[in-house]
Amino acid sequence: MIEKILAKASGKKQVVPGDIVIAKIDLMVMHDLSSSLVSRVFRDELGGGTIADPSRIVFVFDHNISPATQEAAETLVDARRFAARHGIQKVFDCGSGSLHHVVLEQGLWAPGQIIIGCDSHSTIYGALGLFSTGVGNNSMVGLGFGYCRAWFRVPQTIKVLLHGVLGKGVSPRDVAQHLVGFMGEDGAVYKTLEFTGPFIEALSIEDRMLFPLMSIDLGAKTGFINPDEKTIAYARAHSSFKKFDLFQNDPDVTYENEVEFDVSKIGPLVACPPTIGNVKPVEDVAGIPINIAEVGGSTGGRLEDLRVLGKWLKGQKVHQSVRMQVVPATRGIYLEALREGLIETFILAGANVFPPGAGSNQAVNMGAMGEGEAMISTQPRNFPGRNGHPKARLYLASATTVAVSALTGQITDPRQAS
Image (cartoon, rainbow, N blue to C red; front, side):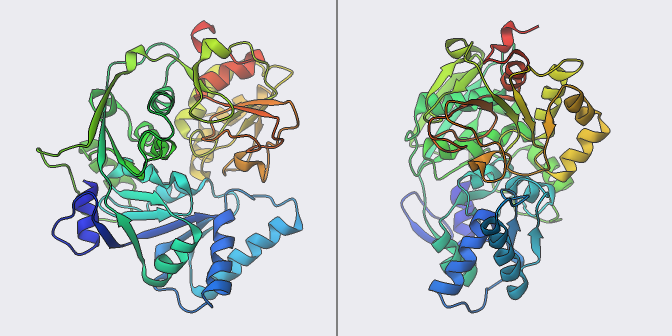
């Protein structure tokens, strides 16, 4: 599928792994930390000029959603002025939500397209029949802004076949973390990861997104799921494009390598400091006291995650030693959570509900930890200093594991929770 998309976008009949192509880009997305940087690169290093197609650029301000410093406020001011000066109209300001979830909710995508972003988790759109990947600020400005183009080396593809049924207390997030832990953070450097098999086929589109999104954490260039009827139905319901090209694998597709996993053998997992690849069974770290529990971010603020949290917090109280942070991924998700009574459940349980955004990601807006503190979160990354003090500890887990841990005040195996 990826080769077909790259071939069409580069005006070729066919491409094969190893080919270098210059492809037309359909959408360029970036959050506030990147949009302010690319605006400066465009102005200071390239001398300004004209953007080829402003309608293909999206700014989402999801990190500094309530700037606490003059410097943070001025980065947003710079980005807003840059957008106004160059006719960029797709600007989603503070409180709109987390970058990729806003793009998805607004329907700014369609199967068969190419999306690049100044964010490594831009690979998320591969769940919807697109080629998407992250790029650096200079690449975005030089080729993207100037020509709506980007160059790629066509990657080899690794097939990841998943089958089986999840056990008690286990979620698709646990499976994605297992892949990172088993294959390694350099297990698929500059490869395409195709996620397939009965387990993937049975998932909702929202749960499927976790796998291409986290493919970058194995070093992959991109990840995708071969489009099926679920993909088509989701695109027709949520994409703003009425017509789109649907590319699928040929029956005789070949792979560089194939790996297979039985998900029924996977239990709840926790990615432990200092890296997302340091994945351990929850029972190995159960009992570690926590100070903060968070459900939110690009891998945890979905409506499905909030419903899981609501199920566990209903009629309960967050442990007195825990600061519980809830961050809906978008305004639309926030509104639906209000309608379903989830926000009331969270507040009555003692949780703090924050405006839609990236949550504690990089601690630029909220959720910073002090020395020696520990957080368990649905966020995607956990290297030292990511969320505050370098000697603070960030553990990554599913919404289920985060929820039960918030109630007990320590990392807890959800299979042991009542």
